Structure formats: structure tokens, C-alpha cells
Amino acid sequence: MRTDSYKHIGRRYKLVDLLVGKGISDPNVLAAMLKVPRHFFMESFLDESAYLDKAFPIGSGQTISQPYTVAFQTQLLGLKKGEKVLEVGTGSGYQTAILAECKAKVFSIERQRELYHKTRVLLGELGYKVYLHFGDGYAGLPTFGPFDKILVTAGSEDLPDDLMHQLKIGGWMVIPVGDSQNQVMTKIVRVGENSFESMGFGDFVFVPMLKGTENK
Ligand code: SAH
Image (cartoon, rainbow, N blue to C red; front, side, top):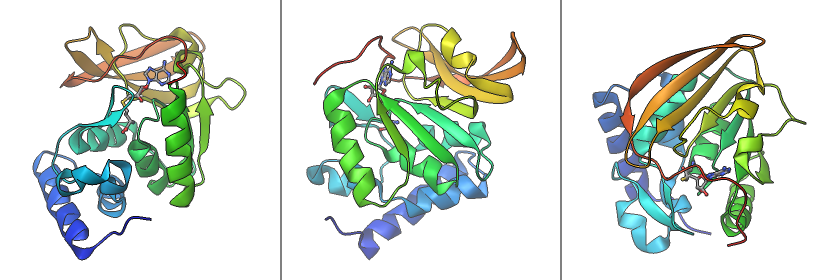
């Protein structure tokens, strides 16, 4: 098991200061960012870089999102204690841990088998009680829905209909929508059985949300 030293904790305080400077103000989000040891979710050779505000490779061609992006998406979700949240794109599990620290009931889907297994072991070792699922996030998790909140951590070309219908009425989804070069952070509110409202919150770049599953 890796260690979380005073050096790491010191770097996290600096990172949180930087996030405050960039406009993150939700105390629950900031407390979670201060608590979760991001270096545990990255290769050990990246230990020194783990608290830079940057995305890094995590294997299988995927990335751990930039801390600002994680904080921004989590803040936009406006999670309340005990809410049911579905994350699409477990990846490293870092964002999953942040959601769990916000005291949500967390469900997360990953389409790459190796990442799913690796992250399942890590989150278990760290003591996070979250429900992880290997599958295609486009399908969501109908048997566990409806959800108060849905967070998509990969860039989608369109609004996934099945997912939107797994929101509770009044529920919110945060999803980056656009082409492979650029996506607009979008918040969708399900206002009725078949009616949704959408708002944009600036440009981001994510790895693409892909259909189906992969065994590597
Ligand atoms: N939240 C992650 C972000 C990882 S990058 C983190 O902080 O580490 C996005 C992830 O979404 C990748 O792991 C990718 O494999 C996954 N992904 C892409 N399309 C998906 C889909 N349709 N269903 C589930 N996961 C998907």
C-alpha cells in the first residue's frame, strides 16, 4: 500500500488553494479534494506530479481528469448527502472517490475491463463502498435507477437518451457534449416525464465516450 505523507498533504492544500482561485467554492467539494490522495490513483512514477492541475495517462489509452475538471463537474452536480449518483467512466476511480467523500450513494460504470478490475481493487483497498459495474454507460444502470444525479466523465457527441430517462424528475445530469476536439460542459435538468432543460458551462476536452465494451 502506498503512503500519504505530509508532503502529499501539503501539495493537496496548495491544489485546493489553486481550485479556490479558479472559482471552486462548494465547501463539500473542496473538503473532498483535500481528503482524497490523488497519487494513489496514478502510476507511482507520477507521484511528484499528482497534485499538478493536469490530466495524466492511466493506461488503456485513458486519462485521470484534471483536478479542476473533477472539482468543477462535482460542484455543478450540487450533491446532497445520501443522493444517488451514477458516474459514467470510472477510469482511475479518483472522481468516484470524490463523489463518495461528498456522501453520495455512488454507482459507476466503466467500459474497459482492465481498468474496471484495477480500479475495483484500489477503491476496495481504500475502503470506499461504491457499486462498480463493467458495461456500456450509454445503457446506464436501469435496475438501480432512477438517479438524483448522473455524471458523465467522457465527451459525448449527443445527449444519451437512455441515461436522461434514468434521472428522477427534478434530477440533474452533468455531461460534456461536443466533437472530439471540444465539448461544452452541459447541465441537463429533467423537468418532466419527457422534458429536459439544458445549460452550458464552458469548454472542456475529455476522452471520447465510446459505445460497447472492451476487454483490455
Ligand atoms: N472519472 C475518470 C475519468 C476517466 S476518462 C477519472 O477521474 O479517472 C473517461 C473514462 O470513461 C475512461 O476510463 C473510458 O474508458 C470511460 N468510458 C468511455 N466511454 C464509456 C462508456 N460508454 N461507458 C462507460 N465508460 C466509458
